[in-house]
Image 1 (cartoon, rainbow, N blue to C red):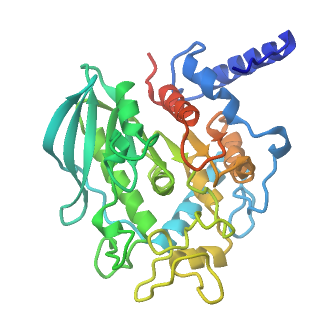
Image 2: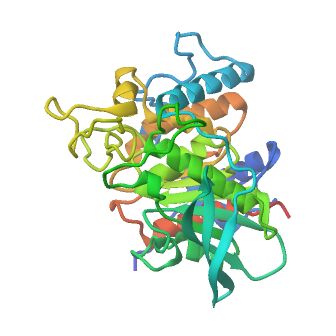
Length: 392
């Protein structure tokens, strides 16, 4: 067992950093946690800052504090307009959503007791024409309003502990007192051809890119959770790993009612040197009606398609999407696809939060593996404990 030694000066600096972070969070509007130094904050406070060598390094990414015509963003009012510009641009390229469902139906198919919560097998209404997705709703014991988290992945079972290990976010959060809804991929976002795209408000409109459709699904699931009597609608987060991390990222950025989000190693920027950061594929952003590109990194023989092609051609990258979260908190639980140098992209959201008067809203942890680890998951749970547990 290794022993960490620090002198008094180092320890004092850490304590001062912790106190400063706590004071900053609690002094700003809409503080997310109760006063006093607490264990979740102690676990996550080091991750709100990049390594010193990456501080203020904005990489190759176009400044988000300039409108697309080059006009600088100087005030909060400017940012509001710039945010609308970014959101409208991305929505325009990915397809406009159908109207959100005001009261999504949740049908309970079965239920069972598990430890300190009840597990409901459910079917949730997620799209027009009463389209649904199957999932699991975990409700902890007790009569108080609880925070909630939407867990998204290929399948619903993994999120409740019936799949690959260390991806059981719903199960772990339910044990900690969170309501959790775990869902898998809906039919119209199939990862296998033939694809069945979700259309906008009318069949005459262009189909949605799958990641936009998945974000729309998540938005309706948020409403379904918010309508539950057990859930505090002001404290609903979202998490996903890998494919689910992409889903959670697009959902939380495009739907501002998510209080906070965790994106586990999705690949937070476009990177054609990494085969797993495959936003170009038709089940993400590369869908193009009547055309089916071959799997794999884009090349002359296998060119880009769909919205991804247009995003690259026009110089956009995902750092723009991240800024739609500001000032809502998010954590990048980074692994093989999101190493520490991704702070070059995250620094752009830090700059937006600085303009808005907020700190400690952007965090990143790092591990070597793509798969989550026990340590990285504990950091995830501490993040949710801090930002989703209401002020006492």
